Image (cartoon, rainbow, N blue to C red; front, side):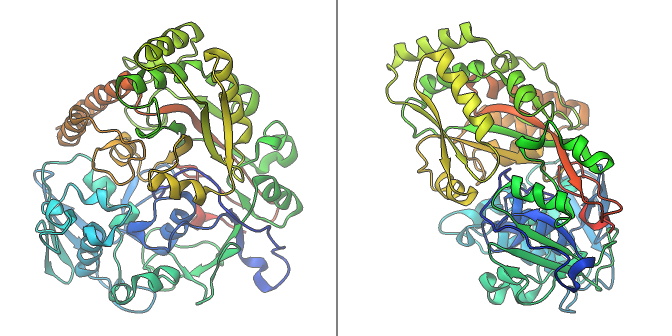
Length: 529
């Protein structure tokens, strides 16, 4: 999540911003946002809007700086000799914003809560590596806590993994690994509406979350980590469209906007001057198609996904619609990540090749003749219409089928249907890195047992290759295995990658400093007004 929390790229339902100068709030940094899908519980927040708030409210064992480098935050030491058994010591005197202590038990209890199957947390898959996860995740659970987690004392706990992991320590800055105070477990739903964290910010008041309007955060005086707030607070303002947000940015009613609308991509650098911000980021966009959609199961489905992929003119979309602020996808992760290889075996299926697309489509028709129309669902409030329609037209013109872009009012509408596996058509989705590794993108989205595997990708050999990549003795060997796993995906086109992001953002003239982080979000703590 994105995210950085796990976050699926989208925009959500919202209301236009009011002026930040209307009250004594002029010193607060206002930034665009949308309504989070769920209450703000770290293990159940896996989308764009909730993730940015959760990461401000909580501090993990590690944190990621603007360039994606991991640093110790609550951790004093993370010791291992085999990358399978870890002894973790936390720094003394950390407190939650309600004044209660952050202890080893705060982490262990939070992780056990996130993993327990009966709690149905969207991010439970991150605990798969820990010994005992299988017992707590089964229905019904065989145990209530993972046997691989043990509290030694107030500041120390141990973690035993099923196998060595090259990613585990880096992952410890990711939201599901945040600690929770004892108050959370008394009423988790109420807690999610008014979270108590240990991060650089806290909720401004009990009414800080005005649903569909805004969320107000203020600096947390209890915070002791390496990313203290350099501003007086954050207001996440929920918009119906990026066009409205951009108009507010230009008018000085919004301080920081992380996504320039399509309508302004050709002019925003001229409009904003040195207040325009660009940065290649670890974000992607793709089309998912679940296996229960007619004609998209088994061998027929693999042929059709490859045909659709080769029917899409990615380069044209990136240049004509996004004016170079997107790059054609070359794999299932993002080109900014360590170990990325844009020329994997099978990457030819990501090339625009109408003749080959028609040939593959005909092979699928030989298995079962095509019927119906090909629909791509997208959230109409997210600035996606132009590129989705361009892709649909490309598919229609190449394959000679009826292909259309189908709008849904909000991101939440689509996500609820996708999670319930009832959407019944292709859908636009994306991924924003939660921590800066290729394995994070792949384990989240494509592990057979991941709750965020939205496309029903289930391949034992792929799982084996990911496990081997995690257990690899060196990063070089791990990256090689990741490449093999992705080549396997390309042969069946697990989903259809479309493009990676070159983020386009902007700040108002009231902001002295605002920079984008590695994942495309602002480096919120360091925004200076």
